[in-house]
Image (cartoon, rainbow, N blue to C red):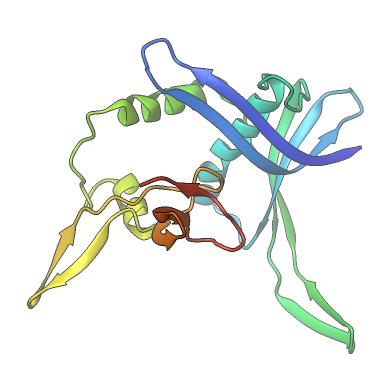
Length: 204
């Protein structure tokens, strides 16, 4: 039996003031013959170790949230397997006017579970967010580079040189996308950049 749905959990670490919330839609969870569960994620493209290591955190988040959910959230326990199913299409066909078919190899990558390492990672993120935040290091910090790519920092042109301006944009409370300043009937507010697909807002 396979299921799709949402995983949701709340955590508070002893030495952190902020609460950590895990909330997301998993691709699929399968019930195995031994009555345990397997959390799986589907990916399009070729597999590699770097991608699998990054997606491993996503699978850990789903597994932990399903086993220790927030009140009234979906509970599926225990999770005994986690893995990534890569599909790398290399052929495209059109058998008739109403159908298009992609074909290619599929690769299963099983992810070893390490809850302690994942929770250490979460705790480190919460400590960082509790502040004070360190100055950005765009040369050596992967998180700063990611923030740049997702519009966390805005670069403005000043004269003949490009000077970085740390204009921090809030993220959407519903989908975590960057937000844009908008004007409505009641004045200015932050609106999700994914509008109209997402209608998340924040007050300015």
